[in-house]
Image 1: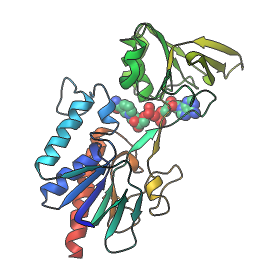
Image 2 (image 1 turned 135 degrees about the horizontal axis):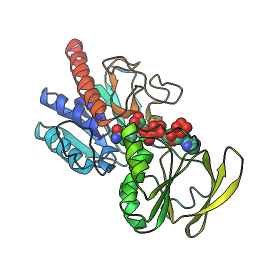
Image 3 (image 1 turned 90 degrees about the horizontal axis):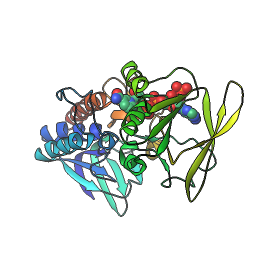
Length: 307
Ligand code: NAP
């Protein structure tokens, strides 16, 4: 079994920052990830609210830079289909990934969150055939076509604005009349002539033949139903934390986010959580980076006290 000072699970902004700090502090550190580079920031076309880049930066480029910087200080990165299990009880934390086992004095969970599903008929059947959870990944397939975005948060409006540059028409379908997204995004979306808002509206079913053809919509005010012809729909209804791995091991909140203290320490000594996976007020790259630094510094202190 390979032994480390620190194991980090997850290679997004939080995990890579934790890797940079831990490696730079001369701790023998490994980061385990299923896809490299990864994370939601990596999938984001343009990031405008990460300081230091006044003209914005592509998410892909930012995360590639994070990776280069962390590996320059000696961070080891290994790719696995999945990390299967975490043993937290002993002095050393043990991580099982396929046939391999790794041990470390401290463990940092930075597994992020994944897109929430609507759970309606047709969603699974048409995923990849018109239904997508990533506008920047799949938007180009819908050039000059009519598409829908479901949701009223930052992701939904960023997706709608991105799709507005490619598609012929973008419907934003939101269940309330108040949008949750930041005001700046709301203003931009309202000014974009290709975007049309369908408020108080939910999608009941996704219909098609091989590919998406229509969405069955219901207006929540008068219960009226109608079919909307679109070639695709982007679902942007929030996130679910990737915490299956630590369920029953660490204290989680009702939704499943890891509960930590102000230094990113979890309910188990020696295990820290950073980024979107942790219960907190703002999930952005800036806060993920802060968490990564905090978690690595706390892990370093924990190891110093133990040895
Ligand atoms: P979010 O803020 O949780 O918004 C989810 C949206 O989906 C809400 O409008 C919600 O409606 C709607 N929704 C949830 N479940 C639904 C369902 N079953 N059916 C229909 N609609 C449903 O999620 P997000 O937009 O993905 O953002 C997640 C986090 O990332 C947020 O903290 C956000 O600020 C951050 N983020 C930031 C940026 C940026 O700063 N540039 C970009 C993207 C994301 P209600 O409003 O009615 O609840």
